Length: 247
Length: 383
Image (cartoon, rainbow over all chains, first blue to last red; front, side, top):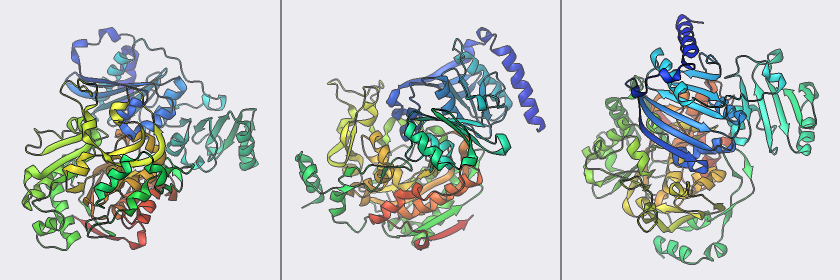
């Protein structure tokens, strides 16, 4: 771990420990909302057009999109309400890439040079800043504390095989449909062609340095089909509605 | 029969769609997957005689790739570099020695020229002002009056949000199909969408997919049903179009020239994401685009390799590149390969999936350009 990353982690840890207990002390006058919009259901097309389809696959509910000035700097905050914590984690998991300071805030979170993402309960947060300096990351955490105040913090329920993975962000994906599959686990596209109505958890580099997939299927015919297609050696275990396999 | 009259006949008769021959979409799909065949009116478009400007234009199968590693500084595209890159590309594409002559192969002083930019991903990933301003500067130097230039996209409000404003572009028209009034409302006093007056109901793409929208969504779609109408910006306002997409992905596929034109020029689009590849190709085969788009300049100074078509900072990168050609299909093929290479380098995917560029194959079948790699001539210029 390089020195800067260590410093980042320490700073963010201190911020986290103090911040979420004292949100009220954050200086409200230092926060100015310059623009706020709300997009409900399929009106998300009005915000991101074709990009919406991925969110709608997870039954996206509502987006609150804010542009704010905080302590003199500009931030773009997107707050996505999803139907369940699993869905919030799912859409988040598709957007994590080369994260630093992963899961350091007592929640699922991911920092990249110009963005912080997090999941709290059924909400997926994205906060974008214009500078990669650590001060902007710290202030993004403060903004997260402000906008997540009072939210229920129920965590997604992971399959048992995946619940031991730590950290989770960047290593686990939750997939509910074709677009998410193409984005999150393209290697499984061929296998799942024709299979629908599933919930798929994918953990990277699990046991034996192989990827693990846990797929829940409603249709028993699809379950049988998958069992037939998958090499027996790759199947870890099966239940009535679920197959666990390595790939 | 005039082309315009033909469309009128089609639209006046409700039964016309049932009588007119339709092509079955070979493999209805989203970004990769097939779906049941879906009827469209692409056969109607194909029948309309082509004109000399029709796609692929003056240089079929020819693409100029210009790279300047200094074209982006601190994340900001540089106008001076963009101007230089564009000059190189235009001279190389046309074989002219003078920039003015190069531009005049495509446009003249009497043309009303629409610059189709792409602001949909917001400020982080819009067609850069460095490139747009360079195009405008070179058009003016080629004798095109400033008042003959129109910057357009589907959503006027997104143009404004991304800096395409009168303040930044004095004397140039900035317009979109979907629009709001000064108070931010979508409707006039009669309860009619402002956008409705900006669409041409005589020219449309029919697909047997019903767009059904709630009150929140309809302002962004303009209409529901099975028709997607062309914007009057294309059918009436401009005589030539210069296409300025961004080098970006949409999942494992790419959204470049054809996507920027097709989804930007029509209404009622969300239903068409189920028919993504067909829509990208088919819409461009209709005269308002096929016969007016003379040049494609892909802004790859800044682009993305994942997270598209939205802008996700972690996937935004500097390609430091412009791709230029009259042939949108050839340009799309070259751009597609650039993005997929980047995705593979970054471990996003392991190989190019043939299905992911099906829109290019479809466009080639419709004779909109050259999609086969071995038939495309790429000239690479490094500054």
